[in-house]
Length: 157
Image 1 (tube, one colour):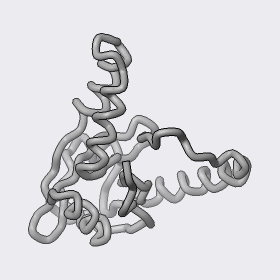
Image 2 (cartoon, rainbow, N blue to C red; image 1 turned 90 degrees about the vertical axis):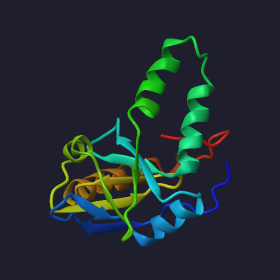
Image 3 (tube, rainbow, N blue to C red; image 1 turned 180 degrees about the horizontal axis):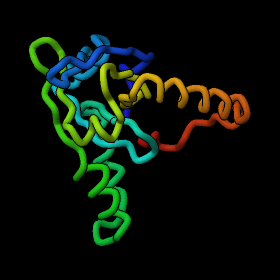
């Protein structure tokens, strides 16, 4: 899939008293460019974060699940986790989204949410937890810098 407008950079926004948070303007532009004013979101399987994206990301996830034999256990496991646990959340008129209580608890979100672009998708973290994760990632990247290679056929998390 062509990655014409990737989700990039990190933005920290306040969570309001109703539990809504403004999706960064650049991220909203990408989502709306994909034909919908919504965010598809689920709990990350690799850390205390929300993983989210738009229509294009959902198409990638669906294709990844469909690449497995539909009668296999791996297909079902991926379908339950990657598709069955994903919710569609509409953006309000001001570009805010209200994540479910379950997602908010999973990510440990309180007064603020950090949005980090990951290319095809983005993640939402508690800001201090994201900073710790970025330190770990930078250290690991420095140790593995010669290993960065393109993956055949793209791929998703």
